[in-house]
Length: 148
Image 1 (tube, rainbow, N blue to C red):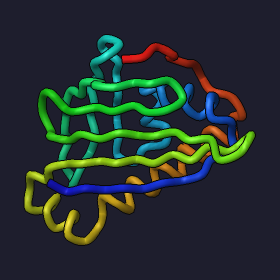
Image 2: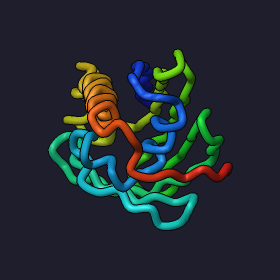
Image 3: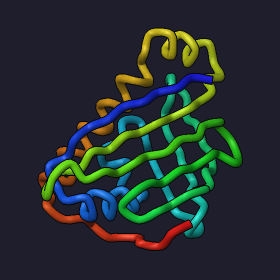
């Protein structure tokens, strides 16, 4: 299984950054290749993305959610992946995000891409685009504050 760990500092308050990350359906606006994310229930998400030239679909279960601290998930149907994102105040108007992602490349193209570090660069780009997205907006598009 492949593993990626990436961090970024965002110039926005912790609660604003966390609140925006809980708006999963906005992910296609800043995540490369993600075509759709739909929240089915408060614990289940449907994903569709282009990965290695193929369209992949999966369902992910949120297995942990602690407001302003951490969200963790694991796929339950489809493309295998699991991970967590942690949120930490880095100052009054700064937040440090740390994303841990485990995934299973299935095709030869995905395995070659994994060996070349393509997935890591993609995740790094996604975090940079999220940073620009929330810093440009200055506020979150919504919030989900329950614990799971």
